[in-house]
Image (cartoon, rainbow, N blue to C red; front, side, top):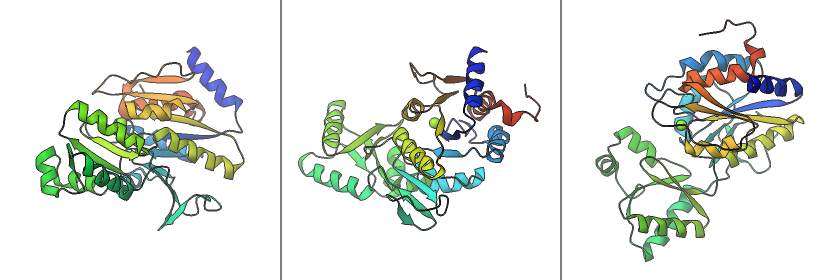
Length: 294
Ligand SMILES: [Mg+2]
């Protein structure tokens, strides 16, 4: 209860603050098993009506995010491939941010690296160190399917990444650590996922949302505060930089450890239901006229 009072107090103290909510997708806004977001829909609608943007921030690609964003009826900027690029709908801010590139209907900020840079590094590296991994760029879709167990559609999506390269590691741990050190020395980062070692630029979900937050502040002239929500280790970077952090409980793994955060909520419920529970706790005002569930 004390925590709840503190959170409400913080919100009421900062009526001038523009709140931004940044959220992971799989296991957070999307159910771990069904990929449904229906348990979060009512809260999402109330946030939208209250002028609190929800920014989707995931390891997914632009095309995957476009489809999901549509299913959420979300019109706000979104962040792809673990902080690699921020897509801002053209005209969302009064002017294009200076550092942004124009791409179709979007202004794009790219704190990460282009995939071509990653492929160039891999080609250079392979001249001296035989590849101890399956290179998705060089492999056919069928080869990826048989090596990974991904579906054909998933394999195709993995091949159409813009800012990161998944590597199916086939060598030993020593070779992997040596590869990671060479990638870091060349100005790139790696991220160990459940199945793949991802090569990407030196960015993360936290760095990207901080850049977007600065952009909001620049145009609104108001201080912005962040609520960040996620369920996995690759969400910790954005949870750390948020004023309020939400760790959404997962049916698949224990909540990641985030020590020393001044405002941390670990949800009781799983996935999108847990997410909605935390949003209700942080912004009780916007739920004032709707009945309490459970
Ligand atoms: Mg997740």
